Length: 182
Image (cartoon, rainbow, N blue to C red; front, side):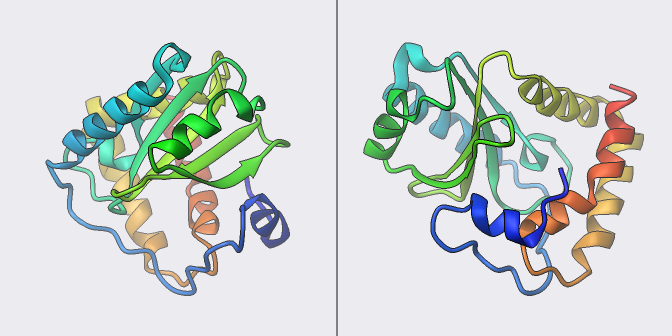
């Protein structure tokens, strides 16, 4: 998506956290799937039938892949712009909205209450959800693409960044390349 510094700051609820340095990647941790399952139970408990889709995505969802130690979860709801239908329930179980991007697919992102979790919320049927899952699935089955992606991440992590989103945006070409094979 390639956000400018101004758009990064504008999307954050409160001040955008500055990375001001390098991204730290760690070896795959087999505890990550369990952390996802715990958060999935918490989210389902809070939203019940309001959960129209829920998946563990991102690098922590790919066995063997080095990652930032942050569990990424994607949640599909009836209408992500209708915050009144899900935000209070998520806040009641400790989630805090950190990013609000009405201009980009009505994306919302929350931080988890006691685990480093990024909960991405989209409207059900939004193609971005399927894209995130397809990318995860491709990395799970293709060692070649997993190696390519990890190598790219390590090269980019060695650079200095002001915001984490800039690191994420820098991976866009390799992600598109891999998705082309998914």
